[in-house]
Length: 562
Image 1 (cartoon, rainbow, N blue to C red):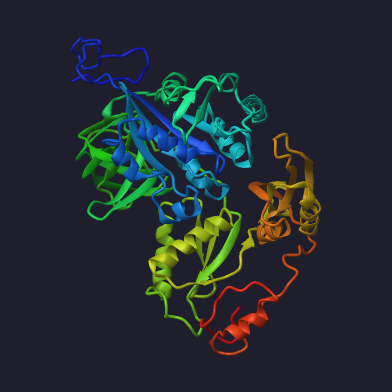
Image 2 (image 1 turned 120 degrees about the horizontal axis):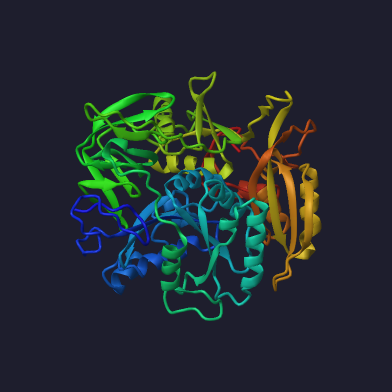
């Protein structure tokens, strides 16, 4: 059997048969590992849907119809919120090329998922809306990809929109590459125009083909194949970038083989620069196949694998060989992710209504669940507090923590949730206390611009830019730098002040010296129940003029409940 060094143009026979790997023996499959990155709501998941449906994944149109839209967003919250929360893997075949595709979240709060996935990629598809162009999260994910040295294939999506302006978008993307200090090779990017919802793509925005063939061809031509140092089995190195769980096989590690090869049943160990080694034997070895996985006996460098057999797998570990008499390869550098900026306290529900809705109520159960979340949520941090009933949970933003709380609630946990607060850090060089700041872009009709500016001024925001969008809608655009403290609760106030018309995009900017002034968080108090019992329509009618209500008639309340 021949073993292939992945290359677009050259096949090297290393098995000694002298075939040159052009004999059709079945071993000349090419491989490409790509991550799909984008700002939220730029059509990334819809584009991946079209690629899946045109790759022979489904048996026929009927099965494709049953799968519906947003095939990869199979989490309940993802479908309800309309966003991608968890990074996912799939693999499709186009001719003799296997394309491993990694779908990533577009929201800044889930940037930890993007950072993990980029360790498995050889290049990325940067999806940009044909009207909006690059947005704050586009900058964040592109910066991470460029720093990894990845080549970028730019996909101008939603080209079917009547207001599409592809030339403007490509120019803005080029400017962004230059601002991020991309290399000359990276800046010379390929551009594909596509309509994910129509399943069409092309190299000319005015002349799309009837399918996604130009996009697949561009992936093969523009994205470099995996770079392999060696295929020698003793040099096995696989950085664990994700973790899954199977009810029968237990914990599963997911990663890309950087060097060497691995066999099913092989003695291996997990190594980490800061942790003790953990030895074991692979009980299962999988590669991704369409939307699922298939078991294989051997996998080689360049492939993305899933394996089981070691219970103490953690993201950031390196899988190496543990065969007798063989010196294993050193561990790879662990995955580095941005530090959290917001924290909340989660604890035991101590209200008079405790125990009526959930089934997991105790401190021990909550603690186990929170620390289990750390197995795969690398951007999350959990710490003990002075109270045995409360735990401090830190994340990238309010949405990051909100998704965790809602997930636990659906699993049957009852929680007492504290208000969010920002994480202050002391600058080691200057000794000055610093706080996180965010870069915010708001697009809003011109008549509401005054209200937006007033809100940001009260939250100590610093105006960066203001103008009129070049699009046909003529929306006003304003950009601010604002402390994360000021952003807590601001989104709902902005939507109220602009009658729900504001489009808000925010991303972490940096840590800056703390503002010592008090930032006004809210200008109104809370409505509290004054007695135990059930709410009545008469009581709610009198209260609704004074604020927003969370409850309806005949809802059990207790004295002091908001």
